[in-house]
Amino acid sequence: MIFRGTICILALAASSSAFAPTTSTSTVAAGRSNDVIIMKIATDSTSNAADAAAVSSPPSSYVLHDFDHHTSTRLPYSPTGYSTWEWKTHHNQQNQPIEESNDNGSNSGDSPTHLTSHSINYLEVGDSSKPALLLVHGFGASSYHFRHNIPVLARKYHVYAIDMLGFGWSDKPIMDYDATVWKDQVVDFVQEVILNRNDDSKAKRSIAIAGNSLGGYTAMYASSDERIKENVKACILLNAAGRFRDPEAIKEPSEPNPIIKAIS
Image (cartoon, rainbow, N blue to C red; front, side, top):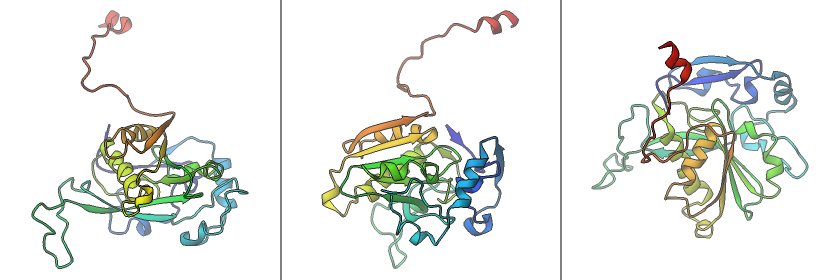
C-alpha cells in the first residue's frame, strides 16, 4: 500500500474544518510544497459543521487546560492542533538517509544515526495512572475524528490520539508513503511518549491501540512490532483497511471468474 508523490487531502464537503486544520495552506505548510490535490467526497456535513461552529477555539496550548472529560461529551476544537511531538525518523522527503549531527555540526558517532524530524500533532486526556489507549484515525481524517469518543473513553483510560504523518495538524512532507511509515510513527510514539524512555515507572505500562480504516491497518502492524508488543495488551480494529495474511504463505490458485472466462 504506497501513496506516491503529492498527498491527497480529503476535504469533507462543506465541513473540512471538522477533521483537519482550518488554517490556510501557506500558514500550515510553510516551507513545504503547496502542490495539494483537493478531493471532495459526499458526507453528512450538517452535524460536522455544527460541531466545529459550536466550539470556541482558544490557543491550542490552553484548549484542553480546563476541559472536563467527566462532564463533557465532545472534545474542544483547536484550529492549530493540540500538542506537538518531534518525531525523529529515517523517513524523509527524499527517502534518503540524513545524518544526525551534534551541536558543533560534526557527526555524532562512528556509526551515524540517519534521522530527520517531523512535527506530529497529538493529544492526551485522562488520568495517567490508568491503562493507556491510543487512537489512530483513518485516511483523510485526524485525531479530531474521535472528538465524541475521547471524553467518554478518558473516564476509564488514559487516552492518546495522534495525527498520522501527512494528515491533520502533523507535517505533510512530499514523499512516498507506505504502511511502514505510519507503523514506525506509532511504534516510536508509544516508546517515546506513552512509555517515555526516561521514566522507568512507565516501562511496563499496558497499552491498547485502536484504529479506524487505515488506522486499523496501522494499529495491527504496529502492535505486532517487536519493540512494543510486550506492552500492547489489546488491538482494536474499527472497519480496518488492508489485507492481513502471512507474506510467506503459498498462494493457492483461484478459479477464474466464469463471466470473464465466458467473454474472453
